[in-house]
Image (cartoon, rainbow, N blue to C red; front, side, top):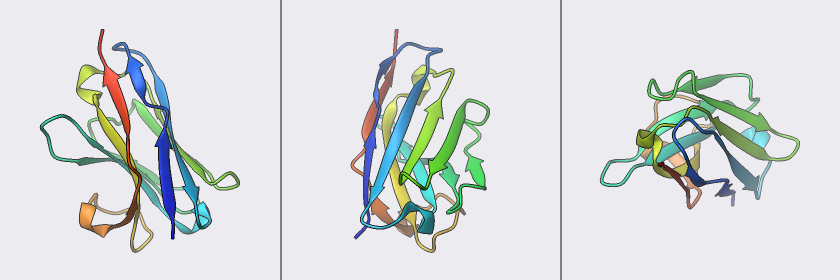
Length: 125
């Protein structure tokens, strides 16, 4: 059973940065693509970014492109989401998830086999 645990959330001022981590356990991260989703208060969950099994391919939602960077350390079974130039509209609970089949494609919640419990990011002055 794959387990995903997010960390790194917190309160940050607009324009600031945070790095989220998704620790993968139960199986090696190299066998899974990993996606980040987020859910803002009163809104539906949306896909943010995805990284392939090898870490060699990534994609981003238009709303975060150029500001967020996803990376993967397969040796340490951890996926990171570096978030720069944060805006108040980035405020949300951020989740990592593993899709089945294990490829980056559309951000479809029903395609996710595993989810973490989320970490809260608040962007506010």
